[in-house]
Image (tube, rainbow, N blue to C red; front, side, top):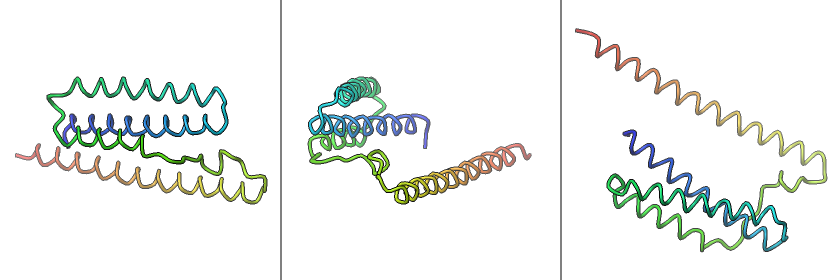
Length: 137
């Protein structure tokens, strides 16, 4: 994967997160009109527009597949019917359930960190092996 492709991938991830955060914020604002949800949704919309403009500057680099991905992610904004925050955000009143959820979250964060560490190790080892083989006469 080239650096350009990697960059475009993360721009698409940023666009997807902006779409879903904006949709969630506006839906939450409709349910409970708190100004924070409106500001968060507006910020997400500004982030989405600025990221799309930034991506369109790379129009010559971005192929049809990336533009299709942008169109697909943008269409997901209009297909949203409900979006709910996680159970931790609503803080269950039963302390046992709350502690269980917190332990599950910590476990999932640990598994994610372990997997990312393994991937990082493999990538670094591959680069070192490639450099060693290049240095040999």
